[in-house]
Image (cartoon, rainbow, N blue to C red; front, top):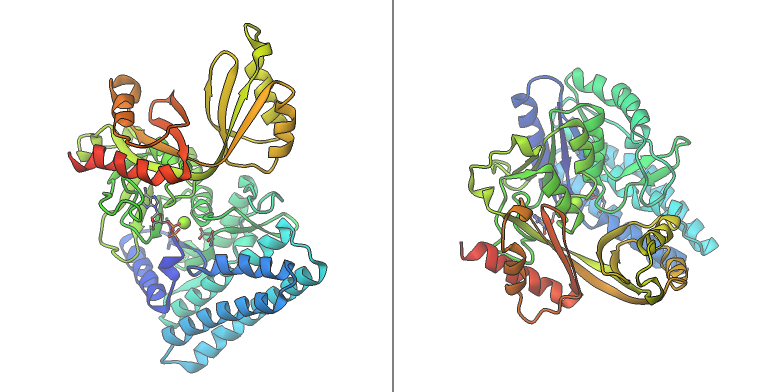
Length: 462
Ligand code: ADP
Ligand code: ASP
Ligand code: MG
């Protein structure tokens, strides 16, 4: 069985939605066995628009919150009219099927506005609406075009904890529900159309997996269903040597190992949500990244290291360069810990107590520099760290990561990386922790410059 996830641009218009269905039909006829599971994102721009509506509502500007909803309605209505232009009655029926979602959205926004309160739980109820809308439209087009299909509410399958905004999927429950709600229909040859990004608690309260989380949904579904392959269909030709929006000459990487892909996704390659690879690794399911606009291109295959064909052009030591922006760096120094042991364990205990994970770390005898992505608990963390010594904070910096292969066995990689940089102030360096990643911290302004210089050095001249 295939799991096929289509991102926001891939369902961004009537034309694209039709393209999606022809890709799915083709995959269904080429792939023996159960019909594919199709996991959809919201139409491009809709999740941002929904979040904006919530922010307007809580700022007591209900009028502009509802105007935002109207523009979302218009976008979907236009797609429906265009896709079903030959059948006005069918178009009307689909539009009506969206009414309850828009009504619910308006009620929530009014509540948010009257109370002047926007909890994470409310944000999830609002922001998760886009996937329900887009998937209903695609399912209606599928029905109209005669594709045997069934629409499934992901919230009946993607059972999560109640960490609103970044919920954790509960895999045992999901496996059970996926068997009931998805596997049966798909074995009967029906394409199952569902939503990425959203889930629900055991009590049925809507949750989301975090921004960009539809990729993660696809991987979770894929693992639960023991899929043959998880396909991430997007708006670029695959995982590339850098973000093509920043580096137009970036090249597609035909094969990537699970670990490298995970590092790249974690350190900023937006093409894949950072958690996507985890369920795939656990079940050994390959992940393929493909372009909806150019479906015949081979894309990128991500699989276990031992299954990679290292003889091809991708065997060069540097695989890709990525950046993660908006990071916070902390510099802690404690001279009272000079020649005393236990400094690092005290520092780590503080982060543990505040459930905050550290990304990069560099240490010396009495100083530690580290970076954080999640700053929800920053004030309490700093208060506790100050008991140990001096704390300096730099907000809004970037991590630049060079990801590749067997760095420890090759001499000169670090030298090459840093000598390729001109007019870049390196704030912190972290290397050697893994064999495949060399990361450093720079200001946000220096991040793009660093990527361009490194890409030019490692890829252009060779
Ligand atoms: P989708 O809506 O399909 O999930 P995203 O916008 O989340 O798409 O991810 C695709 C985008 O990721 C691309 O348009 C590209 O600009 C960006 N991107 C960042 N880094 C990379 C990379 N290393 N390889 C490919 N794309 C990348
Ligand atoms: N629609 C959600 C977002 O924009 C999830 C996704 O597209 O992956 O974050
Ligand atoms: Mg995405």
